[in-house]
Length: 145
Image (cartoon, rainbow, N blue to C red; front, side, top):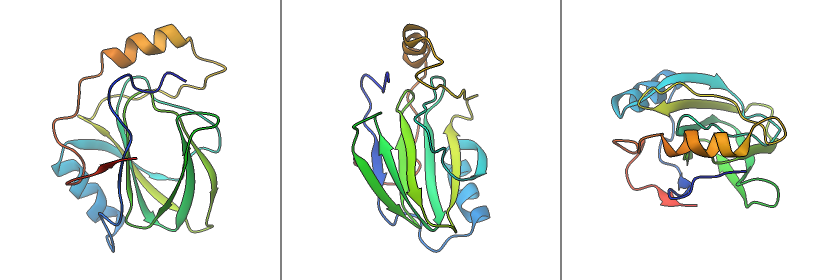
């Protein structure tokens, strides 16, 4: 897994509590995180080499492993926000049946889906290096995770 060479994973606990999906999408868009989607998180390690991603837990709970095999697990609950710099591996390691995640991308960048077994690592690292930093964090004062 390439992960990001410089930017850390950020976690903001209970940063967007009691919000509808539309309210979350609107909040993210106002901060420059667009191309929103609603779903869950893949149950296999993957990363995006062309965009920074934010995941907002709109409903339910999930355990996400970040950084690849052996990486730290994060238990996330409704209202929590996870910011994944380009290249950061992540995987759903179990969730509640009612899980709903709102995802979006910094600057509305196009995203790709990279799996370690199917992606050229050096090519991915070159793409990650070209992704500009985000202008505004999706929420105020997220903490490194």
